[in-house]
Length: 170
Image 1 (spheres, helix red, strand yellow):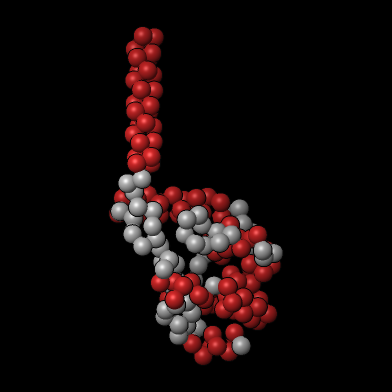
Image 2 (cartoon, rainbow, N blue to C red):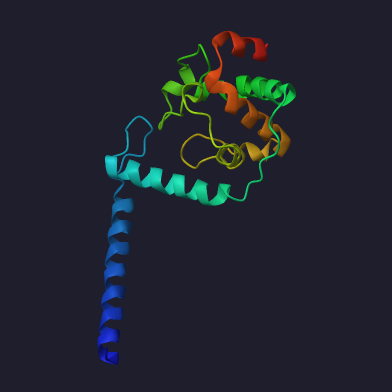
């Protein structure tokens, strides 16, 4: 490939990128995309956000070392913390709705009705939060051992009955 052809290709690529950047800038400046939580994303935007979120968490969670999460003490401490800080958004056994959750978009997962989370992923999400999802970065207020207590609880949450949950959170 000649130097002139490489130069034209590079120039064409730069021009294409400049046009895309200008179009993106105009789109953002127009305000046409409704960012309100009561107006859902288009399917394309939702798919792109989900892919970005999942890949970002997967890459960063790999480095998390999981401690021993067995035992009653972490489970009980995690249950109490979950009841205070998490159940309003993520619900609990026997709790199928909350006023706070109704206004959130995207809706947080109902953690009592899902498979137990991967401990590395759960720890990373709880510690760092997720932008534009209402999931706070609890690592700014909780130490790692407290976050691991929550993870220990989340591993057992889907198998809990309402009675089990009430007993643990009293």
